[in-house]
Image 1 (cartoon, rainbow, N blue to C red):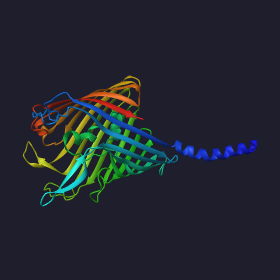
Image 2 (image 1 turned 180 degrees about the vertical axis):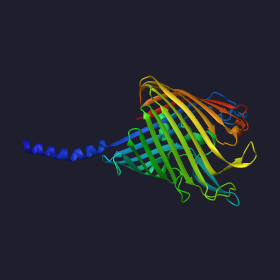
Image 3 (image 1 turned 90 degrees about the vertical axis):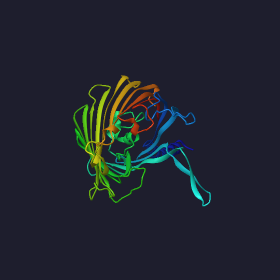
Length: 385
């Protein structure tokens, strides 16, 4: 083989390899895992109550995998991107059905295996219509609390108040982190950005249940560098139910305002407030005794500060949960304190944290409780790579 032939062959091989290499360079895979070691520091509160019967398991000492994310991103070109994300958590699933007895009756078996499910599946089109506009279609993140979650920065430790409201109180504020639909986002000027979104409204974990859609809008204003204010609203028509207080066309609304201060290096301070009203929610007013539609409210303030760059942070948060505006005895306060330490690399973080619950009336959440307080310690292992 002559030198010229050899060079030509190498050039031809390069032409075959380079396009595939360029395509591969546009694809990324990432993973995030949240693992907790959990220990109850109290034994008499609504969630830490120690059973009096020694035969009943007391789960005050356990390791818990809470979430595991696997994300595939493909940047097809400068304008088009595709995302596929798997999430996983422990959810009881029916694993078997059997018939027994006369007449036969069905019994089921379940397990709590750590199972994956689809969280994101969408295509993103940048520079849609105009330069600073992005279109997304598919199963995408909602705008309800994504900015607050990013500023809080410790989803590994705790959801934001709007996201985790039902987990803490048992009252549903119908806020979901992802849903099926479409959105437009953009930034027409340096100090302002916006987002509008239409989704099924049932969340990524449920199929559509009615003919109506949830409409959401968001605006972010940054008057000066380091200060930002977020306004958000969504609305959705509700399926009519036999509720004497419900309107002929019952509606549900969420109003939300966030504010963030980041003018000091290494310091972030944030606040989040939301109000959810559903025309189908009704209860007896504890003051007047009348049946009324009630609101679900919550507010949160948080902050984190960098003590050693890329090594050690400290964080704190205070939440106020109001699951029924007509009955203040259901209110809950929650304080979270913790450290964020990356001992060898940012891919592995140790985040010891303490949760302090304060119930106005803990008996509403556990009739056997003897205290209105809970104290829980978590050693959170956050892995990202």
